[in-house]
Every structure is written in C-alpha cells, then in structure tokens.
Image 1 (tube, rainbow, N blue to C red):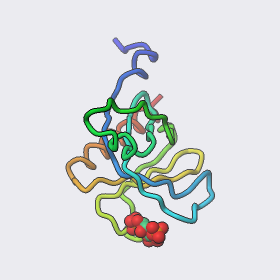
Image 2 (spheres, rainbow, N blue to C red):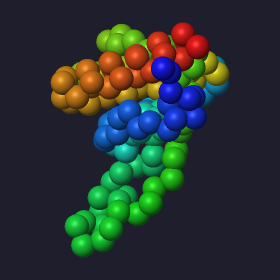
Image 3 (cartoon, rainbow, N blue to C red):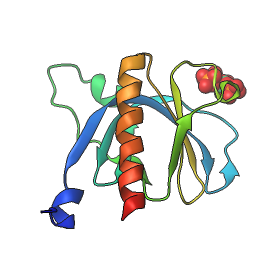
Length: 132
Ligand code: I3P
C-alpha cells in the first residue's frame, strides 16, 4: 500500500555539505559565479541550499552551530540534472541542475563517490515527481 503523500514529502532523503553556485536566475545569466560550501538538504522533492556553512564553522566546537536560513530552494518537479559540460566550470565532479522556473545551479564535491550519491538521489527525486 502506498504511503499518504504528506508522509512521503516529509522524508529526509539526504543531507550534507556541497559546493554550489547559482549561474542563472529565472532565465537571466548571472555575471559572476560565487561558489560556496553550504549545508544542502534533499527532502520531499525540494533541494534546499542553506547559507554558507563557513559562518557556522567559524564558531568552532565550543559553540552550537547557528540555525542557518535557506538561501535557495529548488523544486525538483520539472527540473533536470546532468553532469556539467567542461566549459561551465574548471572544477571536477560538477552537476548542473536546471529548475522549471529557468534557474540553474552548479553543484560540486571533490569526492566523486559523494557527488555520485547526490546525482543518484536528486535524479531519483526528479524521476519520482515526473511519475505523479
Ligand atoms: C571566478 C572564480 C570561479 C570560476 C570562474 C571565475 O573568478 O574563480 O571559481 O569558476 O570561472 O571567473 P572570480 O572569483 O574573479 O569571480 P570555476 O571555479 O567553476 O571554474 P569562469 O569565468 O570560467 O566561470
């Protein structure tokens, strides 16, 4: 028996620190790339990039991490994901996520193993939503 939709959308699928940058905002290409390391959460068909994790890391172990606020939220419904072509970045292991509203994000991690688990999880998230 299928679980009710509310239950499904609350499931945390994945979380971790990734490098990301927004390159296009609703069809408008941004002039500069600003890579930052940010806490990233995939949950209920939405990918959320929180604000730069360096701010909370600066507090060190003596301070609890500050509750960070989301910087970008990307609805996976109607989105597409692929490995970024080489001309999009000099970095290795870069994914390109295009949202339905015409925004684009690059997502990167130095570890091929880690970026591959994100590729799979985001790809599956997009697939599941397109089947609804
Ligand atoms: C950019 C910065 C980015 C780089 C980008 C540079 O310079 O070095 O990291 O993207 O390359 O323009 P600046 O800090 O002066 O803005 P990658 O790391 O993804 O290669 P680009 O111009 O080829 O996009």
